[in-house]
Amino acid sequence: MNCDYMTLFLHDYVDGYLSTEQANLISSHIQCCSACQEKCQQIQAQKHDLAQLPCPQLTADFTHQALKNVKLHYADKLSPAKKNKYQQYYLTMAASFVLVCVLAFTLSGSPTDPLNEPVKMALNHQEQVNLVFNAPKELKNVQFTVILPAEIEMLGHPGKRQVIWSGKLQAGRNLLSIPVLTTPTYTGILTTKLEYENNSKTFKVPMKIKPGKNVT
Amino acid sequence: MIFSQKKNNLEFNKLIQPHMVHINQLAYRLTGNKDDAQDLVQDFLIKVFPRFDTLDQERGIKSWLSRVLYNTYIDQWRKQKNNPIQVVSDINKYDMDDETFFNEHICQRFCPAEMLNLSQQQQILIRLLFRLKNEHRIVITMHDIEGYTLPELSEILGVTLGTLKSRLHRARAKLKILIEQEKLGEVEVVA
Image 1 (cartoon, rainbow over the protein chains, first blue to last red):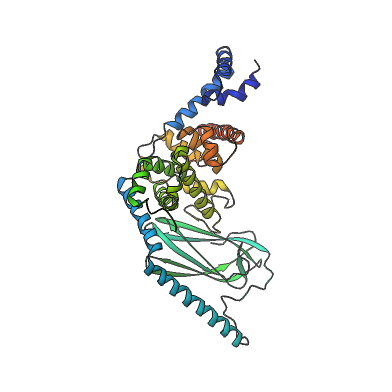
Image 2 (cartoon, each protein chain N blue to C red):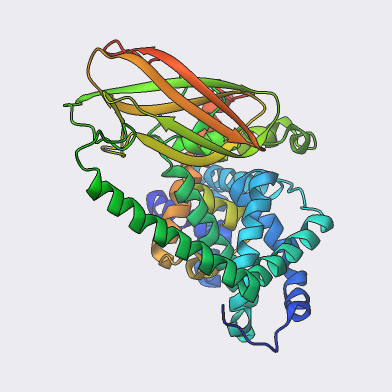
């Protein structure tokens, strides 16, 4: 039997997916072909090593708490008191939205909010802005806000002057790497706000972009 | 949220409890660290709870639960991966567009305490697994580590048997290359 042809079936042979007849054919070939025998042993050894990888178990406490959280999650969703609360919230939001629209039309001659002003400059220079944060401990549920100057926009967020998202920080040094489009030689301030555990920190970072170099 | 009143919380706990060891283990294998595994399991349970009474237990509860867990994981993974900004602990080391970067970033979050019981070879093997493309890592993890068969995986991952088989072979071949490079000292393993 051809060794190239054999190779096609070696994985299936090791995994036990072949019929008895096919497996016997491979087996008899392996016994008289050292190259195929070696390949077969390598596959078996790799598979064996992987199967031996231990896995820590999540504790019974965690499972108990997780199941409890499920009940709380759906109890919250089904509670009529909560429903009323959300209804009130959405009504308030809708009313606020109407009010904002009315004000926007009324004050159409006044200057616009700089955060909502669309970027109008031709931004065709791509750069990576790196910001390093040193966290004293691991922080979950951190809200990151990046406020972008008029001459910069974040890749994938055209026209937005403010990008907000949630994430984690590890204990120690963390890097925020922000892909931006800008003018080739921009100098200015980039503002980043971190909100976590009822704390809020704002960082105003002076930036000087030079073509072809990352900005830290 | 609509679900049968007959299936109360106690019934849900009774039905899900025997599978929690398997679910927790698979969550850990997929995410690579305890924190993310716990988040995944929590999201999974929230997803499963209202759908539990629709489960036809004759069809195989283990595969069904694994499929829900896998889909929850993929949702989370895509969400994280598509986040415009990744927080990483090592500067200027990776190409941000590279999927390997993202996976290695996850791998760095391995808790050292969890690594204590692993041999050096096992630690390297886990790190090399995270150097693979996500689909390759998942097929090796679920087939070679967790012991799912290809027909089971075909149902769980929603991929045809033929595609899955060639994916497994390619994944093993790539892992083999990484292991060989590691032996030659060509792959730097992040400590």
